[in-house]
Image (cartoon, rainbow, N blue to C red; front, side):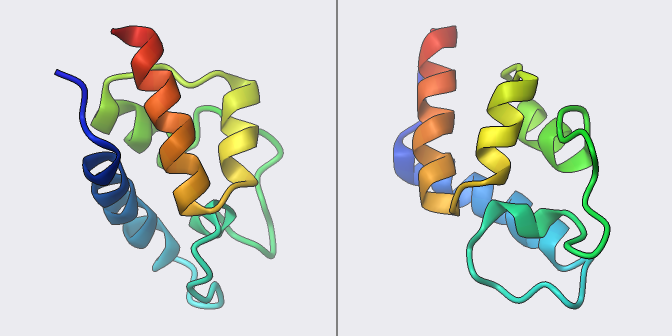
Length: 90
């Protein structure tokens, strides 16, 4: 059974908070990019710990292009994107 958007948001928010808190300078603006260092962002987003945690939590594979899109989204936008990715799997 596919999770609801509310369930996706709640799980994604937990992952977001866990990773965002690693970077004390990152304030909480609900931007997904705050799960990574804003002073030294990674060159490649795919395969980083936040993306791997999202893939594992939702049992999906996220491409490099999708990883970059998620990086540039708000948590609400990423919830919609993940619902679409999950929908492809079903």
